[in-house]
Image (cartoon, rainbow, N blue to C red; front, side):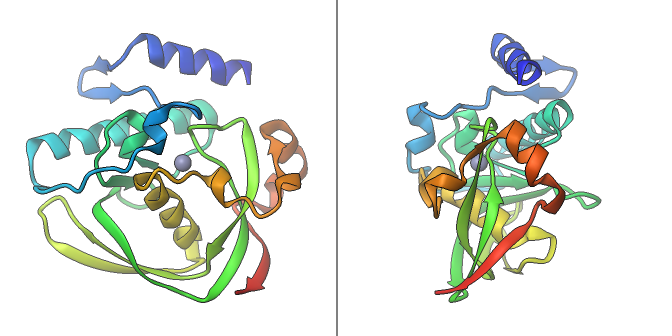
Length: 204
Ligand SMILES: [Zn+2]
């Protein structure tokens, strides 16, 4: 935790930290009202502004991933930009920005999974998510696309987590049982081997 705290302080002190073309932005932490705002729709996904925002999201996520070992996705409100943009970086595949993403279908079937967030990485918790969803979104050319996400690569839960951020909803709001909450140290000691981990299945 000491390492994480000092890294976070370092990022905060250099806001934004531009070295060459790299821009690491401060990640808002739990309690910052910016995390509870409803993000605005993006009218032009192909704009310079959105391209720069996506670059910052990618750089910031990469920084956190390197510093902490966590972070597969990030949402624009987490870096103080109240716009409907999320950014995923799954292992071994290209970076994936989604503009104006919306969930158009949710399976009735639900799963309980471990979750955490770059905005409160000291706490881990179990949350309930839909097992499968369909998401409609725009790419950076403004083209509409659709993706069906399942438990494969834990994509469904990740998209639900990140899209929630656009409506000011945090993983802690989805906790199924407060008694499952644990510190990062305890999570890593006891549960990480199963991660990222569907721990139970429930039918709605
Ligand atoms: Zn998050």
